[in-house]
Every structure is written in structure tokens, then in C-alpha cells.
Image (cartoon, rainbow, N blue to C red):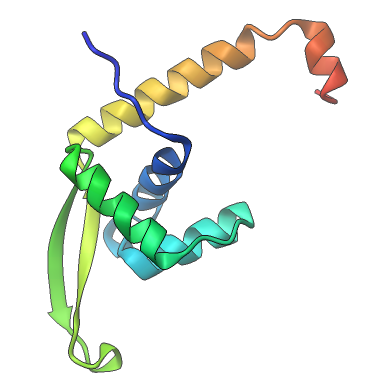
Length: 112
């Protein structure tokens, strides 16, 4: 079975969509990433990544209703698919295996 490959930023965006659940759209994903990571990210970068993850089958999207606060524009909401949940689980497993394989002296040097 072929393992899923996610880039670091793709993983962050996919996790953020999972965290936001029903409220995941471009602006909220961007704000949540900045709040949780302290990392400034551009909306266009997040938007491009959301599209790429949807093309890979890790996200699905649906259009919400138009709102006056957005000048009548609609929001595109994203949801993690079964393939996306599987990819996240695989990435988590790989990371845990790598962290668990660190020699104790290396962990001590890292303050762990």
C-alpha cells in the first residue's frame, strides 16, 4: 500500500481544517494557523494549499450562503475526507516513530 505524502505546510493546513470542523474556510484557516503556530501566513498561500489538498482528495468543499458582511459573496467551506484522515494518521505515525527512535542523549541535548 502506498503511503500518503504531505508537505509540512499541507499537514498544518489539513490539521487546521480538521480542528475547525464545520467552520473551515480560507480566512478562518489562515487565522487559526497564525494563532496556533505564531507563524505569519498569506491568505493566498493557504488558499492554494486548500485547493491542492482538495485535488489530492484529502479535502472536499461546499459553497456556503452569501452574507451581507462579505458583500454578498459566498464562503467555500472545507471538510477533511476519509483519505485526508488516513493521511493525517499516517503522518502522525511516521512522526511518532521518528521521535521514538531518537537516542536518549539527543533528547537530553534538546532539553527533553
